[in-house]
Image (cartoon, rainbow, N blue to C red; front, side, top):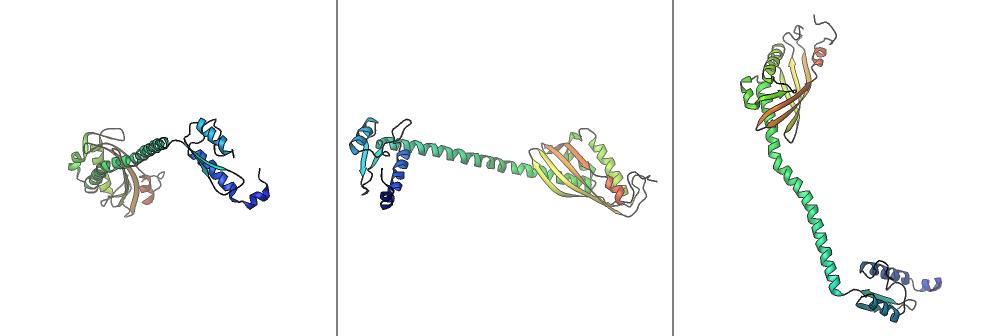
Length: 252
């Protein structure tokens, strides 16, 4: 065992020993339960004998000019290393391709679906503009299926006609503005703002000339180019507040 003074005189000894351990581990010179050839400071004849018995074919004495230790490089056969390298390269390639596939496939799927999502959003925008803003109920069948459901019930065409008629009577400039749209799968979510000027009777309240604005959310499910289901919520209670009537206050 070298003394501290000898270690100070040969400071590379510890580093070289560490390299020998690392090289042993990386180059398969150690196996489970093995003796760790090349790391124990064995005399050359003993090290050569143990190397041969362990089945390793390459044994090289490394002359680092250090009188305190002997350093040996022990490696398996060249063809074994070549096979191991090819196996490692194959595994690495498979893993890389798998990772690339996981990245590219979802992106390709998204790119494929994007035109359909944009088409669905356009269907919703068009019916909101044509039917609600322009009041063209004759175009209803162009955008909605024959059995379209509204909030899980039928009768959308009749209900929409009545709603538009009463709203336009009270707010002649009634208008819907699309604030945001999100599409996923076969559904389109649209955040809207309704606005108008109170110029006609609304729920028994005489015209006030006040401008009103309220928000709503519509979820439309599209199939074969038409809306087959719609869910809609709107905060219409604010209309009464904006025209100066509390919801609990008598209207007359």
